[in-house]
Amino acid sequence: MSATDAAADFAGVIARLGVETDMIVQQIGFDTDCDEELTAAVADVAGSPVLDADTDEVVDLVLLWWRDEDGDLVDGLVDALHPLADNGMILLLTPKPGREGHIEPSDIADSARTAGLQQTSVLNATRDWQGTRLVAPKAARK
Image (cartoon, rainbow, N blue to C red; front, side, top):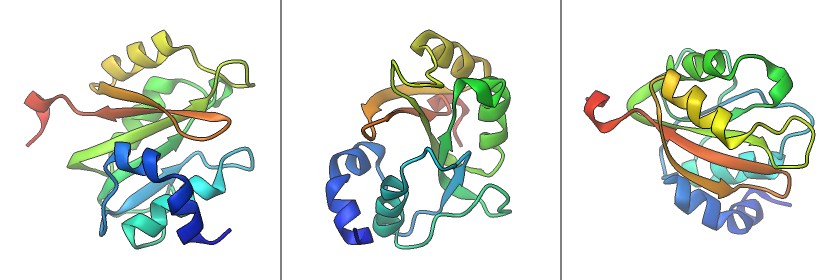
């Protein structure tokens, strides 16, 4: 599947995320269980490759793939905040209910609050992954 085909398949997810041309996107926690087509679709709409976890650039969007066994979610969210632009967002991608590595919605909400983030929406990102859109509260944005 080409990147353009992937972008068409994920058009609804990408629209709900607010991905736009010229956005700089970073991906953290990507592994063999993740959905490469979603990453390709985001890159296609953004117009540039998705950066890996060790980039030094300021980014507009972080795709954070996280499973229960990945460790403390608060720490992962705080780490994802470091490269994020003032008005940037995090898409926390977690396995759907019933799949290995699933994280309870209440744990996501608590971790987001502790990390200083606000949950704005939950979406069906892929067949196996759900996405939780997180941003800094408006009062904290510059």
